Length: 460
Image 1 (cartoon, rainbow, N blue to C red):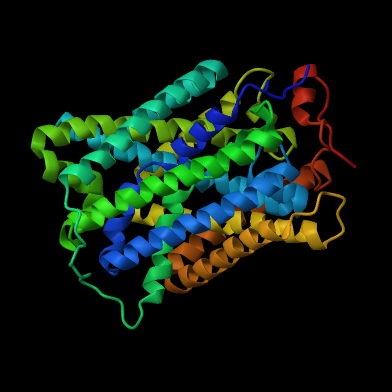
Image 2: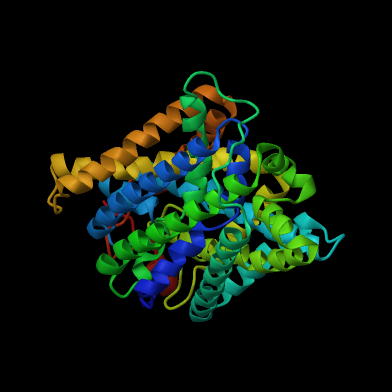
């Protein structure tokens, strides 16, 4: 009896998974931080650059997904194409930050909007309740979760398009003349590059389909297409949203995001209030809650597939495995618990910057694996020159962003170092317990042993 999940996902479910993962709180907060140092043109250019980099990353990941059409995302890719230790690091980064932190941030955003509708509603407890409710839902069954996820994506798409239409029709559409209050000296390239961390966070999720590749009926075909189609659609939406933000909000207004933890205000709420008044803003708050819950739901579906893959390989406890035709329930619960801890212990801006750095680091490493496949000793299909160009652009941008980020923020470096220390310590412990560092071969895993009652299998 195999523990591999039954393939049931198609292309458009994959596109929906990508879109739902990408559109969350980040796009409604990031430009407020950026507007304090960058002008309208620089902000819009930064989002164009961010979109181009995300598409380059999606193209590189599409090639990697064709080489390794298995669930697990960066954990699986780096384990198979580079070294299990790098995959292990990426897996722990996903567990501690890559999914759990964005879920916490979106839960806080959804609860904040609800608190505007129901004054006095406790925000963090409400956010924790939303996380817990989605954990119960996704841990209970796979098919019902997929149907609900598709429905949430449909509603979310309509709401976002409605918000964009509202801003374009009723808002200002002339070029803004405001200047940032803290204009960066010289060309301001450092502030520009630093802003890409916020944008990287907002675009994170373009690779969501790779985490559940085993559950696609045609993973080699549909997973790459889902990433490219979903990322392209969201890039267009983000550019429209940010035009609305810079055209309608001056830096003084946009700075409201700095007090988000106490005021519960995002750029979307400011726009809705300006254009529709209190009643319209209340209605918009209710609608946007659905968008954030959809993002949380998508990440609650995707993230646990990484931990289940690690458990199948013997790198995490076997209880985190998925059963045949069932979701990895214990992995869902573990991720939700970490998200609730982050929700109560971290500030929004800190999460935006540091999670963006972690995502950039491991996605950049994944892009680099294509060069090893092309120029190293490998019997895998060699990636084309166009694919290598996309991978090179994405990897180079990741390196520049990390250099600027580490130089300007000791806290960011501490986050990366802390995650690496925890992961490498656990990896060393796993090697000690199993006696071998290499994961089981394809088709052989410790979850099968758990179901049959036999010992875990570890490759020689």
